[in-house]
Image (cartoon, rainbow, N blue to C red; front, side):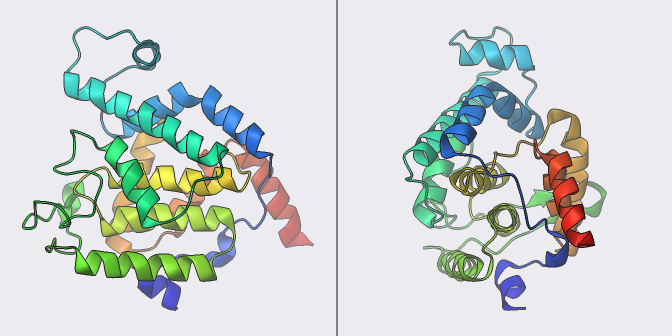
Amino acid sequence: MELFKALGFKWNRSLVPSVLPIHSLDRVAFRFHRMLPEFVWDASVLEGNPFTFPEVKTLLDGVTIGGRKLSDQEQVLNLATSSKHLLALVKSNQFILNKATFTELHGLVARNEALEWGHFRGEGNETGYTPDVGLGEYARYTPLETLAGAPELNRIFTNGLNILQSEVQRPFEKGAAFFLFGALQQFFFDGNKRTSRFMMNGILMSAGIDAISVPAAKAQQFNENMVRFYLEKDATEMIAFLIGCHPDAEKIYEINSNLSRN
């Protein structure tokens, strides 16, 4: 299928839930705002950040935490800034699934953490370093080589996004696929999964679907599933995992189970 070829991975589309609870934009925005400390903490745990949930709440209240590395503190603050910016885009109907929004969010997510931030690999000063992803006992996954001007990365992004937009209409499937597209292709030197999840949640909230946060308690399962995704280039398991992380997971299972029986 042209879609799978363009994105670089496949999934069983018949297993993706076709119906998810839809709410008003104000409702999904309110929930995201109310849950922001949990979202930030969950995301920081996935990055191996040692901040506890109470410490994250304290930091977001404007009180610094003694005994913690400044780099860990900045990562948490970057996640908070990115979350607030995403929320502002969604609430003002300015969230767009495109490169400009993707790189803008990355500039907030990976500020002072990635080698460079706010543009694709090769579009800045560094044109010779290609990052990779550690897969534990399975060694490492190496994405497309970094080239000056990022011609191939831009070609893959444009082609992948165009086909995703034209062939995938359901918001959850589109959001999950974009997250995994960004994670696999590694458009940036670092912060790819974080930025791509923000884009996924922008797609969901803009469609009236609650945002998804991977709970800290599921960090190990998330990492194990991602390793298999990088190895097998099959997103079926990860998409099912993301559904399980949705706040309406039980209702989604029930609704789609009833639909499949009718």
